[in-house]
Length: 233
Image: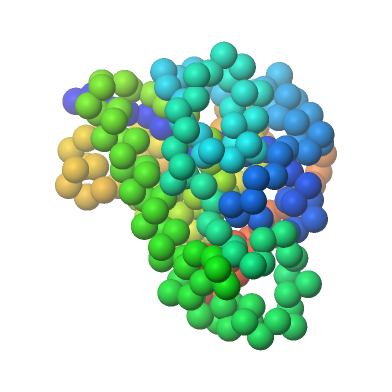
């Protein structure tokens, strides 16, 4: 039976990533360091060839696609945007640490939302529906490979919902410009809504750029744990 391959790739680094800010739907571009790292990844490692390209509408994802796949014709999917942090967009944890609403949000799990923002459960429903529509479109057209450029929270949420092997969402944290390849078998997808996560991207990359990956992972894990309502052990 025919299978379908989707490569989920996180956007490159932005100034907000460097500063540790909560930035979801704010349209922040790639920083120069982020662009340079993407060019280095593309030069030294391999991103698979694909038939179709999808992206969040936010510029950091579109710019990333254009650097990695310069000739790509991008299909924009609005619902692939990152979670909205509402009034806390652009703020850091330190800046919000004494805010009572922020503390309540951290303790409230997926059902709660930032002021004028999006709850974890609403975010999950939105991005999972967007992914399902992409899968349906591939199957109907017979297109067997695609690249999806999205945000860290989007990728983690999708793999936590659908990915095999099973893992918690923050276990799927991935560095900027990197990602995962998933294989979709129609029978399993239609019956169980699962995808096989079978490799990391780019091919051959060991997960370290200039020795800063451990810091980025620790920072991202903490932010994700707080932002998306994961219960602490």
